[in-house]
Image 1 (cartoon, rainbow, N blue to C red):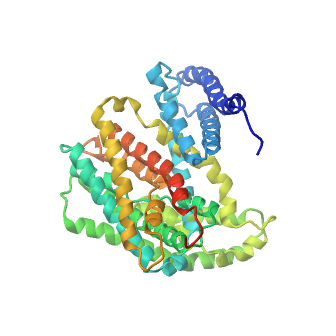
Image 2 (image 1 turned 60 degrees about the horizontal axis):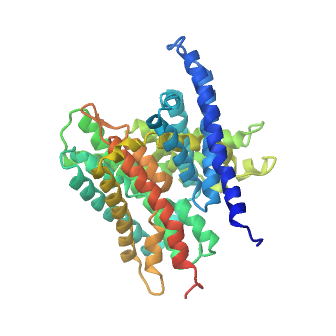
Length: 453
């Protein structure tokens, strides 16, 4: 590799740093212009501010993601950081970006982006592979849900003893998730995806997502019942748990049958884009059914991806000009909408709350609980010759799934107050960012040795 002097390296790094600053400056100027325009008729639906907001968010997300990838960090952290910067420029006297967060249409686009994200996660998994991962992956996943949730509840209760009990449970729920994408990327780069550790981690992470979504459904359902004034009863939790399990099982059985016949019938249609259109309709249908049942729509989107099998749409794929599968067809849509979600999540982080030492302490201890909780996973590894520490390290990142959980928590209310307030939400986002940043170098350190070594 060609040697670069310090000055040359500094110049090369300064270019990606300059671009976000320049884009932000242009964005502030443009935002000032359309803020005055929108004020003329506040009740009218004006698409111009939304279009400009999308320009700023998408360009900012891409610049931030590119910078972080250049630093060998996940792009999602760059998108999140751009959002944090946009949301806290008001602390320095720049208030133009506050208008971004007040656009309800952007929130709708962000929520659709989350559905696409979970749909893609489901597409990358399938029921058959989950059944073959073995006892180790199942035990690792179970411990990876129980231990972090208990530690998260304990941490939240210690720092906020006067808060509603359900807040502590939701904080614990945000620690359950594992970002399979981040760990899978590291394992692939190290050519260890097929190693015993790799198979256990990926299998456990997928099961973790399913269990985490069930936990999210139960806790969210209890919170919504409490907001309606219903007293907590154990039966309520079991009813919600039953609905979540019934939905997932029903989606696998009925959804599998429906997708097979629907995609088969679609082969008689003529025209372009049939595979993508039908896939989106299937995703939205299951998300809608999940919402009607009182579950988070993302549970339905994940289930839709989980049950769609390549054999169901093989003939439709062969009719595609480039023979793309659903994952490849979904990628442009996800590239458009998913960054909107992460930037808006970052904008909800209030850096001013960290002026309170207790909030900083909460973020630090919560991050420690998130790391330690996943190390308990290693106790579920059965058999000899498997690097248990590597398995524990691979389960650490919360990534996009943890942010989705936190985002849902920030919308839940009890008695007119948010379950996850600004301080708790900001601490959770910091925890997600730190666990996501720490995992790649730790996993590389542990696995950068010959397989079986």
